[in-house]
Image 1 (tube, rainbow, N blue to C red):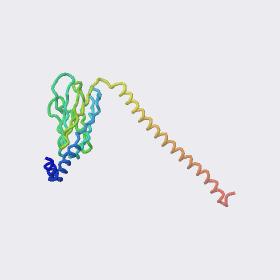
Image 2 (cartoon, rainbow, N blue to C red; image 1 turned 45 degrees about the vertical axis):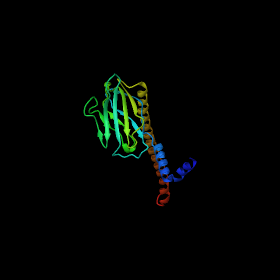
Image 3 (spheres, one colour; image 1 turned 90 degrees about the vertical axis):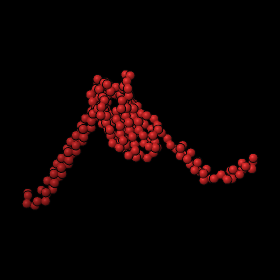
Length: 209
């Protein structure tokens, strides 16, 4: 038995072994596609909201093969509804509550699969699922976003908006102050140069006594 065992390993094809090991390594390198979303978002009734979804794939991005699918699951018990589909070009829904409400806001080459929902309604409260497939990378996590439609913006959002507006006004005022100050300095410098030149011209004129 020992002789047979040794003969087996001597006759074993090393090239086949290398191919087998390469295939194992290739399998180990394949990883699922990773999806990143904004999690919980809030939108005021009647406004537009961007549902951000980005992805990271272990395979090269091919715009002809990549597939993006969005679906919606309401808060109350009900069936899951297709929201949006992308395959070489956007396919917004032609029926249902999201008809004429979805805009493609992504860029597959930039690994962005985001969409915009126009004029959100209270019936849009629920969980939105973002799924991306980039063959051969078709397995991995699914991104979820929980949307909450409210009557008015929350205090934190109003505070951020106030800071943004106040900051913009402050920048404009600061620029105006800088421009006015520069103009005043320029006028003063020109006035001083004019006062210095006048006496010099009088001394150079011999006819004046």
